[in-house]
Image 1: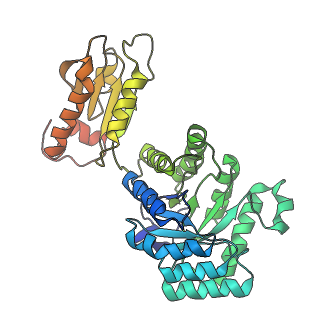
Image 2: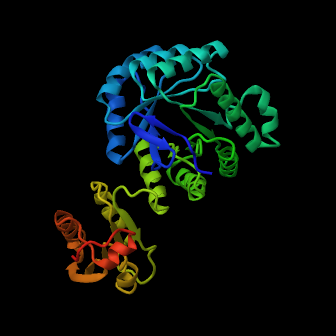
Image 3: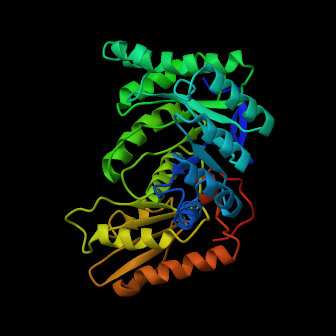
Length: 371
C-alpha cells in the first residue's frame, strides 16, 4: 500500500502522497569537493531531486559544509560502521543520513545518532540489502530471500521506533528483480513509512535500465514507492535520465521532452536510429515537457506521430515536419532536424499552445486554441 507518513529531506517532501522523488549518488571521492560539486551540478541539470554522497572517512565529512553550501540540491550522507561520522555529518547540515542501525556500533551508538537526528531535525534512511544481510539472517536467505530482507529491515525499524524516532524511509534492495519486488510488496503491508525503491547493482546502462524499469516500474504502478534510485555502472547522470523515463512512462512525472521513435524497417530511406539519436541529444537541453516523434518514412508517420506535439518523418532526399497531427511542410533531409527545432523553439516562445486534441491526449486542461 502507499506510504502514510511523510519526511522532508532538505525541503523535498517524500512519502505521504508527494510526487516520486528521484535521487542518485556521486561516484567521486567526497573529500574532493570540486569534483563532487561538479558532478552534483550535472545531476541537478539532469533533474535529480536529491543526491547522496559517500562519507567513509574524516576528510569526506570535513568537505561536507562546502558541498552542502554550494550544492543546488539537498545532500544525503551515506555512512556505515562509524557513528561519529554520522554525528559530524548532521552537525555539518546534511539533509539526511543513510545508516544501518545494525552496523553503526551497537545500541549506545544508535541512541547517540538518533538523539542527534532529533536535535537537528535530520531524517534517516535505513534498510537492508540482500548482499549485506546480518549474520543471523544469512542462513535463511537461500530458502526465503524475501523474508530475510524484510526481517532485516523490520529489525532496524523496531530499533528506531523503540527510541521514539519515526522520521525515516526504508529500502529493501536486491540485485534480483523478483526478490526486490516481493520484499517491497511485503514491507509495504507492514509499515507506514516512505519506501526508497531500487534494484541494487543492476548492471550497465542497458541491462541495468531494463532491470530497474521492471522492478521499480512494477512497484510504482501498484502504488508502492516514494523515492527511487536507478543504480547503474555508468555515469550517474544516466541514472537520472532512466529514472525520469520510468516515471514518464507511468505518467507519474513529466520532466523534459519525451521522444517517440519507430523501430525502422525495410521501407525507410534514412537511418532512423541515427536520426533519433541526433534529436534525442538536442532534446536534452529542454526542461519543458512535450513529445517529439521520429519516424522513418511517410507511410506511418502521419498516423503514428499524430499524437505527438511534433514529429518528423525521414525520406530519401526530403522529409516531413508535423505539428499536433498536421503536416507543416516538406523539408530537405539535411535541414530536417534544424527546422524541427526552429518550430519547437517558436512554439515554446508562444507559450506552448496546444489544440484540443493534443491537450486531451496529454491529460492537460484545454485552454484556448492554438496550433
